[in-house]
Amino acid sequence: MSLNWIPNAISLLRIALVAPILMLIMRGSFGWAMALFWLASFSDGVDGYLAKRFSWHSRLGALLDPIADKLLVAGTFITLAYSQQIPVWLAVVVILRDVVIVAGATAYNFLVRPVEGEPTRVSKLNTALELLFLFFVLSRAGFGWPDQIAVTVLGASVLITVVISGVDYVWSWSRRARRGV
Image (tube, rainbow, N blue to C red; front, side):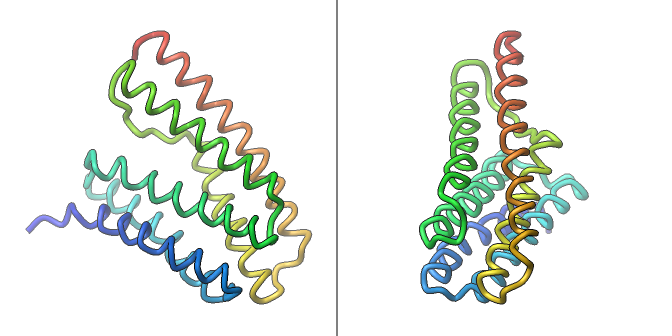
């Protein structure tokens, strides 16, 4: 029996966790939100590891994984901004980058050729920093730890990598589109 469906199931679990996380944040249950957020974030690493380690790649998985990531990150940024835990402008910048990437990938997919999901190193770093930042914000809201300076420094790191990875995606995919690759 093949187990190649496991990474896709983990991505679906991550998608299913988004709504409870957001509801817990809105209720002010930051500790529980943090626990579920940690589980969702950890599962992102697990499904990626399994897909790579055992070559359990699929077209569905290539779509589900980034969708799960975008829903988790965007939903959490929006909800934390709404509940005044993070600056609205930071949430806007993070979500704008994702909108640009998704719009670009969609255009590329229909105008050039099917998109093969290939996150860059800076994009992977950005995602890791975003997840850590959101975890820290939830932890600070729920338990008063870490200090605000740590959250601020991490938020600045997120901003820097959002801008760099956004520019990198636009630049590299524009070059590919011109070459038709």
